[in-house]
Image (cartoon, rainbow, N blue to C red):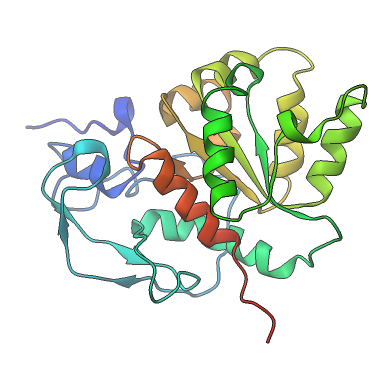
Length: 244
């Protein structure tokens, strides 16, 4: 009998479950991609994603076909497709975006990242978002010379509608350190429905070993999408209709 790969590899997406020899073709006993942790619990509104016909391929090299979905905030002409798990995970974030009134000088996204990623993956994601007209609070650009670091972060968090945490091997090394700045950022973002984890060059299993609470938040994964595709999904998430 084939053994389920969820304990070691996770089933965070449709394609990941499809690669499991025990769960392909049916619902995994591990909940179809959700962490076994029970907190924090979300109560999204009764939105049912619309499914299209299957397509071949897909992120993560799973091969075969998988169903795709469009959330209600995705424009009719959008070429961006989501897994049902991503739609469910992002729906509470979108509701927070729609509820929050834009403050003067507000930013769409607060980008939380490890210091070691500031010139690498974090900058890449920031540049991709900026190219899509998303305003990003990014420490490399928004903390002036001599400005108190923590005070600048406080202001950035207060003025941003969504928080994105870029989970990389470098961040996993930093999180356990006492007094890490990223710990303050994450604590603030975790307290509200506005945090989207982006797992890059690591896994949710590795994240769970360091931060079970953060790992309980479903997000996006560059093993399933390119960084450009992740940026496209984030851009749609924070885009609001223009005032008539």
